[in-house]
Length: 174
Image (cartoon, rainbow, N blue to C red; front, side, top):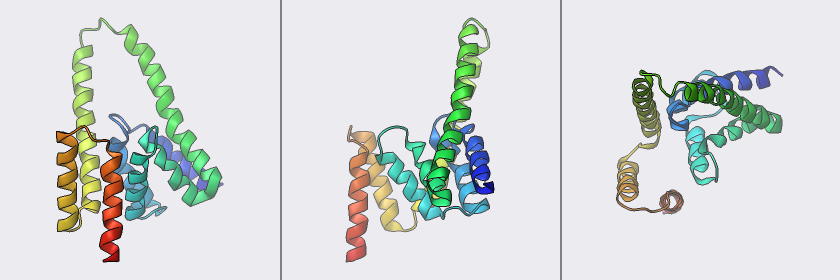
C-alpha cells in the first residue's frame, strides 16, 4: 500500500510539472524514478520514453509502464490517475479563469512568460535525455541525422524510431 501511495505522490507531483508537455517534466521524472526511488534504471526510463513516442495518444502515458514495473496492474492504474487528474483539474480551473481574464492587460505578458518557461523546461528535458542516450560517436551521429531528417522533411517520427531500433539490433548482432 505504501508503494501505491508513493507512486501516487510522485506522479501527481510530476504531472504538475508538465507545462509545455511531458518532456518538460523529464528531468524530475528521471530524478524521482531513477535516482531517488530506484524504481527503474535510466536506460529503462529512456526505453519507456521511446516506446511512448511510438504509441498512439499522449506520449507520457508511458508512465504506466513504470507503475506496472513497481506494483503491477494496480501500480499502472494509480500512476495513470495520479498523472492525469491533477493536471486535468488544474487545466480545467485555469482555463475557466483564463477566459474571464481575456481583457486583462497583463495576459499577453503572462502568456509570453509561460511560453519561455515551457521552452526552458523542454530544453532541460532534452539535455537530460541526451546525456543518457548519446554515449558514443554512433549515437551522436544517429541523433544528428534523425534531427536533420525531422527538421528538413515531413517524415513520421515513428519511422526513424523503428529504423534506429533495427539498426541497434543489427549493430548488436554484428
